[in-house]
Amino acid sequence: MHIMRHGRQGLRAALLLGSALVAACSYDDTPMAMKIIDGETDRKLYARTLLEAAQALPGSTTPPTASQLEAIEFAYAQSQQAYAEVLRCQDEGVCRMSSMREVCSDVAALLEARRALAPWSDLISIAEMLSSNRGPMNADRLRLLQAEARRDGKVSDLEESVLTLATAAAAAHAVWSLTPEGEKERLARRRTHAIDEFKQRCDAEAA
Image (tube, rainbow, N blue to C red):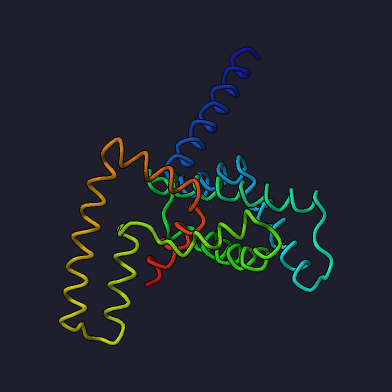
């Protein structure tokens, strides 16, 4: 009986080890990384708050109450943090864009909600105005510019000159971002532009 019990325990341990090895071989870090991000930031929950408010307020003649406005602005601030986490995850190489199509759709809907809510909130109105400042010529902006120039199948001499300057600017910005000052500046901008920065990344990927 003692031998049989040890035999069953050995078999169970072998099965558990085999399952762990199979899991390790098939492990995809992207969904797990996104699950952790969304679990820690409640990205979907805050987006739902903004989307529902955007659906309700534009057709209303009654301004939001102070508590409603506080909830909207808090949800937007938390959404900025959530997308900053998505960008960090992607920059560190554990999130691949091919698995983030749904997140790109989410951020597009979130920007539509921001436009609808801007008249009701100073915070969101300022964020909407800041979005027109596309920031430094980084790799994502360069890809968008290249795609736009080549959309008609040819690149004029003027467009070629612009792309050459833009490529040099993007390279200089990449080098600057590696310095402590550049990294500090990049992170400071991300705190106020994370949603727009991620949308730009989605657009560059799709271009």
